[in-house]
Image (cartoon, rainbow, N blue to C red):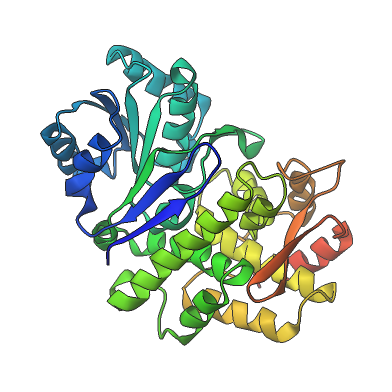
Length: 366
């Protein structure tokens, strides 16, 4: 499995390399871009002990002067305070406009490093080295960067494309099973909104809940087709003026769940899975897609070991109120991404709060 997928944009095109052993070749891939010699490698305290030394060795072997900064692990640290600490590390290392920030980690590390790179000296080079399935197939591609506000997820941020994305599938071997399942939520999303063939492959698979149960061929399909789906959509709509919003399928309710649970107990992929179940049922209630497709999606989410009910203790009225703070709200109307058929979704602001409440009521834990 060695694949290169291009994100074709008017001004900021870049390659996504999916290469086993990529971590040990990172320096040579970065050197091809001819950036300056100074690199700040940003990771977290969970990932760095596994892969930090290998990344540093590869970068140094290609002549880069490498400094590192380790963030605490977790969505709860995706804050402006953490960004300020990355700035401090950039200042200590005397990063210049020709310098590069490299994000080694999952989606949280990538989002924060990208935002820091976008805003340090008004923008320096940025490279994504995702280490989780969720980051590989989703967060590392497309240039969305940012941090959370106490009242909402990802409310502070910028579009800032990386110079390259370096994906090493081998690192998934150390990914905790729960994090692998979280990434599968985003993979399922692509099957619903964009790629019928990916959906059919997921449907045929015996198990989707663990890395060890995936065949080599299925892993290659999951990575390459998911990344290609994201690249296709981003190429058509870089700044989310329209089509790109479909990538938020399941995310509207997911972000409300994450906000109300204070990013504790439910990870992003789990919240997205719950959000996709809700969006599917809303679409079915509105007559936009058929109950059989709803059941097919539900079966794959269950096969991936992901939750299909709301977390215990959440108040439905609070969820609906939190939806009003979503980034996709326009003219006071919450915009939902709703499926029309497998492989196709649409953006709708016609979802009534009563419909949302009915669906969520049915999803309360027994």
